[in-house]
Image (cartoon, rainbow, N blue to C red; front, side):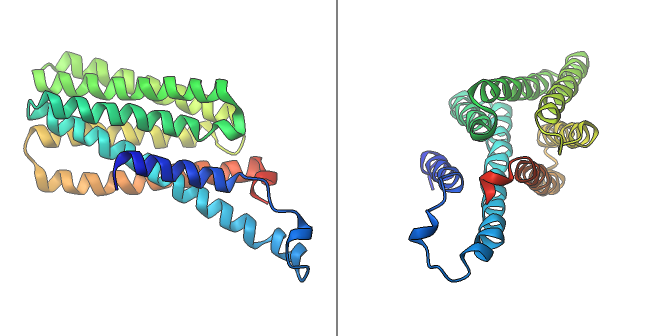
Amino acid sequence: MTPFKQHALIALVFAAIFAPAAPTSAQHPVHVAAAQAAAPAAAKVEDTKAALRDLWVSHTFWVRNVVLETLAKNSAAAKAAEKEAVANARQIAAAIEPFYGKEASEKLFNLLAGHYGAVKQHLEAVAAGSKAKQDAATKKLTDNANEIAKFLSGANPNLPFDTLQGLLIAHGGHHIQQIQQLKGKQYAQEAQTWEAMKKHMYVIADALATALAKQFPQKFS
């Protein structure tokens, strides 16, 4: 599936999840109330988890491509991967717009852009062999994780700051570890890091989806 088709599919999923429910009169009258109270709500939460998982895993996929191509000095491929990474950040930010509005979506996009910028800064520092610049990039990545955690926890009381902060700092650590391993040609170790990154993305996506369902139950009913 091409990135365009993948993004279009995710957009359709979110459109379907948050579309108004069909009028009761258009549904079978038997057990309508019970069905609306249970199955549809659970299904929408699971659909939201799946859509967010896809978005967050795509983030790690495209950033990994940027790392690989940058280290291989393939500037054209690195540039193409970076374009997709930025587009993916826009998709993640757009996912919160049905809940918090356009302004919040733009705020999250800017924060995610800062996250990517810090990862890229660390990548360039590793490629250049500069320990001082690596340390500066790591601090920037940690500060950005704090900002994202503060933003999301402030928007949703079901997302504790400390929990989010820990998840996001660990995610930044995965990026750093992956860059170091790819630079050192530690491919077996990096394969393990890649698996850990994907599973970690599932944790973040599921936490966001669950928190949204708790804060906006009407959108999942």
